[in-house]
Image (cartoon, rainbow, N blue to C red; front, side, top):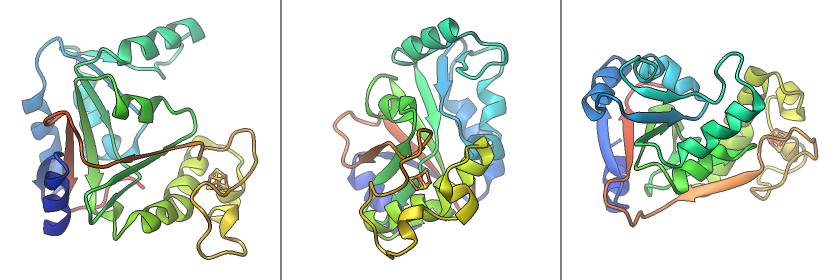
Length: 213
Ligand code: SF4
């Protein structure tokens, strides 16, 4: 943990470390202000940590692209609002010991918000996401994150059945963009967040417990 915390700080990424997920809701509430414009990516870590409940409180303006009954037009409006939000919450698919954050998206609204737009980006990351280097980070997506997300989202990609990316069938170390050709492939755009230019725009709440996948 210590190594990752120092590396993230070296990369101009703000880090708040905590021992248990129970500490996270209070950490998040301390950051927010009444009326804050907030949005988020879909994330099991946000739900498991209780952050989802916090950001949905009526004292904040939460822009939910998956709100029940949302129309395609309303969803487009949410995507436009996200760029001007005060806070954007998500997790990371992996964090390396060198302080890099890897995120892989199918629709890519999450990685676009991480890279540009919202004033603050807050990633809630469990220790299970820590890997040695970027190669292991890409492998983590292929072996853990993508298969489990396909199952969660009910997407019939090969990894949902195999439990790992199809690119690993005859190759222990495929290129990062190798994979299936399915129309609903969820590994489409790949974002590595390295050293940041904006001061403290990106915060990682790093938890000593596992969160999400
Ligand atoms: S490329 Fe396709 S099979 Fe491979 S992990 Fe991504 S969605 Fe799954």
